[in-house]
Amino acid sequence: MGAAANYLKQINYSAYELLTTVPVRFHRQQKEFISIVDSPMLRFDGDKFMVRYSYFTLAPFKMPFERMEAWYAAYDQFARIVRTPEHQYRTLLQPGDVLLYENHRMMHGRTGFTGGRWLRGIYYEPK
Image (tube, rainbow, N blue to C red):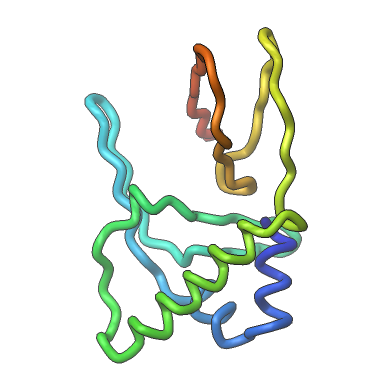
């Protein structure tokens, strides 16, 4: 997703700046797990890139009202970019395949499918 963020930077620097500087709240709570993080959606730390793009964990955040329209326009533009084929990698998993990815460096999803599936997700947080 670093490529998509860099593309946004090239075509709309003000949108890129909003998504890399304005902290927003991400809140996820499960039965035995809670995570609350305030962070910009996109972060570069040297050559390391991190994306937080999860509509179901995006919580209300504090921002002056007059900046919200511009922030949401930037968010929408980034969403459109990551949905283009040139910013995606698609693969068809077969039974027995294992897929590992760094959750903050790669956005993930799936297209439609038929039949059953079994998926196991895990979280690992290095100390």
